Length: 160
Ligand code: ATP
Ligand code: MG
Image (cartoon, rainbow, N blue to C red; front, side, top):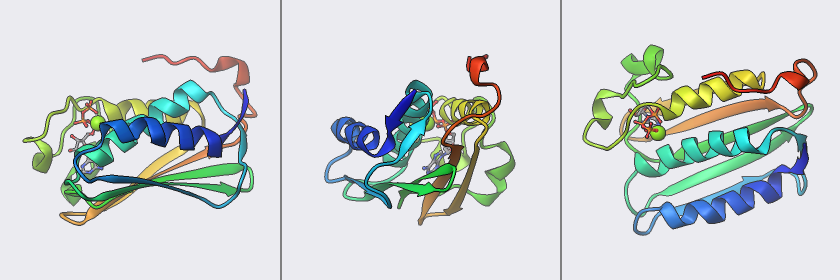
C-alpha cells in the first residue's frame, strides 16, 4: 500500500497530542516534504504509537517528545526521542522480551508488551530497531524500515 509517511506522521502526532501529560509537547521533524512508502500502515502505526506512548509515559510533564522521519535511499529512518527516565544499561539484553519491565520503571504502569510487539512487527517488515539511552537523561529509539518489501510481500501476516 503506497502512502505518504509525512502526512501519515502528522496525523498520528495530532492524535497522540490528546494523550500527553500537562505541558508536554510533541514535535515532528522530517527531511523531505513527501516520503512515499509501500508499508502496511496498520503495522506502522502500532510501532509508532507504542514507541511514542513510551516516550510520553516515561518522561515528565513539560518535556518534549520528538518524532523524526528521514527519507534515506530505499529505507526510512524513524526516531523517537524523549528526555525521560532513561533505560539502565544492564537491562539492555532483555528489553524487547515479552513482559520485561526495567527496574526504574516499576512505579509506572505497564505490562511490558509494547516493545516486544514493536520488535515483532519491525522484524516482519525486515527492518531493525535499536535504542540509545542515558539514565535520567533520556532515550532515543531508532527504527529503520525498507520503503518497499521486496521478498515476502504476500506473506505479511503477524504471528504472535
Ligand atoms: P506496555 O505493554 O503498556 O507498553 P511497558 O511500557 O512497560 O508496557 P514496553 O513498552 O514493552 O512495556 O517497554 C518495556 C520497558 O522498557 C518499560 O517497562 C520500561 O522499563 C522500558 N522503556 C521503554 N521505553 C522507554 C523509554 N522511552 N524511556 C524509558 N524506559 C523505557
Ligand atoms: Mg509501552
